[in-house]
Length: 173
Figure 1 (cartoon, rainbow, N blue to C red):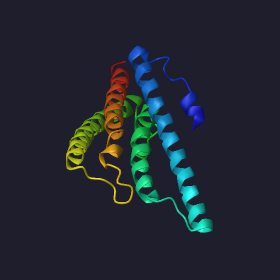
Figure 2 (tube, helix red, strand yellow):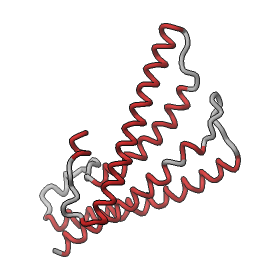
Figure 3 (tube, rainbow, N blue to C red):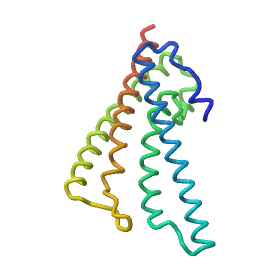
């Protein structure tokens, strides 16, 4: 994965594309750091539980929040490099323009749903903050884990729209 983050794909994307790519890479690196922290915490908790009868209190709550954060933060870069799984059984022998058209439609659908998810997470964040809901063991406010997901899904929406523009240029060329 490191070679993908270090790969420069911005040459043909223009200034806006380079900005989006840089932000996507930053989010992907943050996602990796969150996953690393989660793995270290899990190992420490397992070792503590096994050898010292003293696990990390609330490790399950932290893993739950960290997983949601890490996954949402990795989505924009994955989409930027077109790293999502694509089933091309029916389109393997289709023309490049047809594939670009299908990619354009998929990107527009993704942008729409990423926008809706951004809005709903933002709304849920506000409701959780107002209700002061917190985790059971650590008493961490639940909305804290929602906060990084809002910009992540907003960036996914922007990324999908930009990649859709690339697909449109392929169709029109």
